[in-house]
Length: 207
Image (cartoon, rainbow, N blue to C red; front, side, top):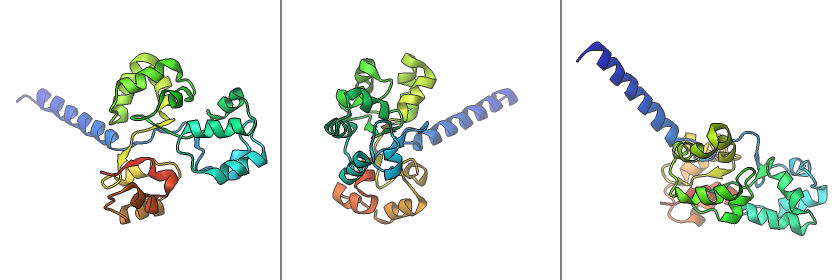
């Protein structure tokens, strides 16, 4: 085997290792400034566009929201218009599950539109963000793909997720990660909620 061929194979092996490592982590899309509305402080909620202190207090009392459509319905019930609600979502959102999100949920993702309400379901099941980058990126390019990803998550296995995976969950701290790991193995979603909390348990699958 020539030195050139050996070096090339070493480079390929290193690239595969880096790729596999990136696939194992970041099971929640990397934020570019969008906050999780289920874990925001009340004062930060009150600072959102068109949100009054009274609405912020009522929103926090109603948490956790299971979906962004639930948040949308709540905001409309508080007197906001759809346009006003839409202005909130580039700043605060409830992540959608890439493998189960409805068209109504996807349509509330800033920049998604009707096209992504078709494309997101087409490539299910989503397993990694490398897959997401590849499939969605061919339609809108890497920058727009990264913006879309921050509103999404791919459920991770509650019993095997690594510390790096767990730390991608909004609001995660090392103490929370330790508590989730201590509660393993999980057999039901109810068991998981006791350790992870209802708002954060939605990012997992119990397998």
